Length: 276
Image (cartoon, rainbow, N blue to C red):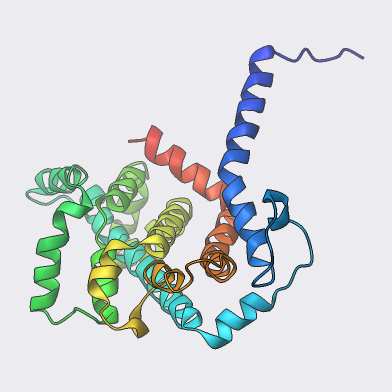
């Protein structure tokens, strides 16, 4: 049997990838082991953070005896609703821009492209003034709606929809199908890949969103995890155990989603980078 020659370049890339993965995973691994320690444990060296005994009691204490469970539920509700609304509105708008001819379509698409050039932080002040005028501050609606309007999601969908054959749509129109029927029964079933991509991006973006929930949520009962955890961690000036446990509670759902939908995430990054 002939042995395959291993190229030096591939070995270097593999080692480099493994090294970068270790660098990125090290803080997560450290935080996980710290969250399993008993409070007040004497730390003699770095190795003490990883040594037994371990306990999952910290997770139970936080979920039952603190506001972390409420913040977790808020994050789940907001992230799920933002994901559903983002996919629905982005898909409808993208279908109109990609497949329906109307006056000013290209100019409207250019408007959304220009939106990519404006950093989100630059719109915070007018966004807050608008939300305050609409009485949306310190409400769940105020947490939701600003996160739905993201130009990148719309552009990715427009790019994908433009690649769908017009012959299918024309055939459906000849058969008497309306735009809503075409959108629901033809476009959406053919767009599972891009829908999965947008859903993951929208969920992770909403889950990690910090600045807008910090400004919008005044009552601690409406905090999401990114807002609540720093406040919670501020009450522990010395002990790292409970803050790291709270961080792991916030990180575990995102990690699980990435592990489950890793293939779709990679496809989405490739799709947004190559087809654009």
